[in-house]
Length: 416
Image (cartoon, rainbow, N blue to C red; front, side, top):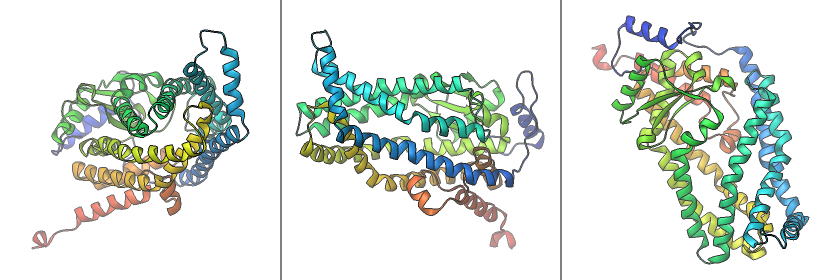
């Protein structure tokens, strides 16, 4: 299935049977090739719009409104003063301790303000369209985990930025950029070891034959020393499917959602893994880290120049102003970074097509992925430009269909 060499029909049948069974249960055979379900296409149009609107409202507009109100109303300053009054004459009576409390409370307030929209988008809509298997309690537990991780990471980072801005007013942006580059590099290498297990149960892939073929496929395409193939037990929470390579060196892992193994045909699984392999071989994680590094230095420099015109790194209560400026600058370059992301995704698609040499499987894969996730296949061009880090599914499908046509069109030499 995952080998570049052609297998016999009997071998393919055996492998397909193994993929669709566990130690005790034989799963229903997967329909292949997959064609769009018209009912799911109708649902996808409504669902994708609702997700986009709630994302805009909760993730962007509400956050910007909150930042603007707490800064312009003076609430942020009152909060900082109140914290100082409460900690006065205690062991917490220190400028940076008070600043840490302020940052933690500030992000907690942002979380609480956006929670109703997050609940509607991440729980109500997902259950309405049968995409989530989580109970409300499980969903809230995940939200609290996310909040805790966010506070543990964002609080010291913000304190570090303000400390550098206050202590090194001329070169703070350089030191801050280096600091964040290092942090992002470390997190990209260990998040699947530390953070992912907090949200999903993981287990070794039990199908030894499938594991062997996946590793052989990876190594034959330049992904060396993949020692572990792990199954992410995502089906307990979602119907959506995914896969990916994570980590470097000894931490390298191939991660497969159990929903991918359960719902997809072997050839489709091969296409998904080959796409993720393309990202790894093309070093896309490193590429994006470098792009972020290139962007973060001028962004910090400009943000600092604008920020210090109206405020000061000495005053932690001016954090909302700093975030507003930084968000505004990043929004200017966001369409360009999304365009580059779509280009890298296209490169990974082309790598997958060259690897599996099966355009029909690729077409079937994206049709099934789109239907399962209720993705809009052909979104408006402006929506793609401003919100999509991947090419529109219709473009990916058409690219694969061209590959199929090319595969089935005899060359002049063959005609002769």
